[in-house]
Image (cartoon, rainbow, N blue to C red; front, side):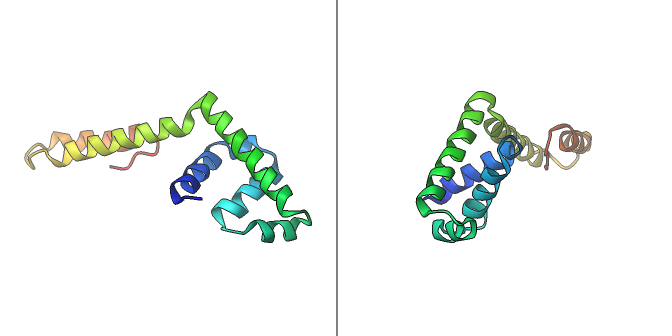
Length: 116
């Protein structure tokens, strides 16, 4: 599985984990965040590798369904992109434009998760 795909699934998990059953959360965490193998997870839970694979597949499909409906991860990405554009624009301002430092501080606290 590609690093991009793993990062995407981790983003979905961060956004929607509380909507999953605890076992689904655990399986996703072990496989995608802690890099356990299917065999290691299967041994830990006393189930087959195929059962782990199937459960992970269902959990990922559930996360993707939540994202298709709610769009939280895409919204976060869009906000991050906007923050980066605004931060780059602020850095291009001349140093004597002191009022913009106030705008930068305001943006930092106004945009959820904002870091400029």
